[in-house]
Image (cartoon, rainbow, N blue to C red; front, side):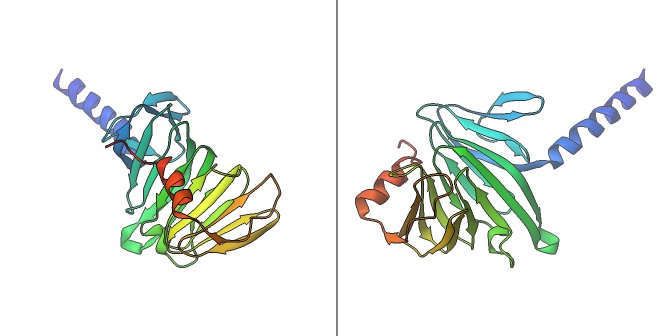
Length: 205
């Protein structure tokens, strides 16, 4: 009986540890409801829950979801958003890693962590209309006055579409009018426009 119990414990440990090792981020804040969709199905998220590489994150109407990744990166999703953690690797001992997030729909706010500051810029956010190369930064993305807008709050980003690319400085934004179109020339956004963008990912007090 004891041997059977030991064997069961070892089996459960062998199954659980690999899953725990795959956790790349943790839910730090949640307003409303959100879920993670994976191969085995979907699960409702709560504060403290792990998020794994490959998870497709979805938020409900009026909801907000904030994650903190193991390298310190923070991601906030607005309501009705969907984003996939396509890739994430961070090895602190070697100061090496890479990350790729894929936006399907909705708005987000990203503040890069250690991976976003590495040489070679191995952090990228892909969207259906353009990709954003991160250079150690905090920026917002989502639909506002165009199907896709990007606003840089701190640092530097490069927004690239099949039609071209632009580099943004702090306070500047751009937009993509349609699939295949080049990003609009960078411009400094008004306070009112910035407030509208930030409101899409802000939590209720």
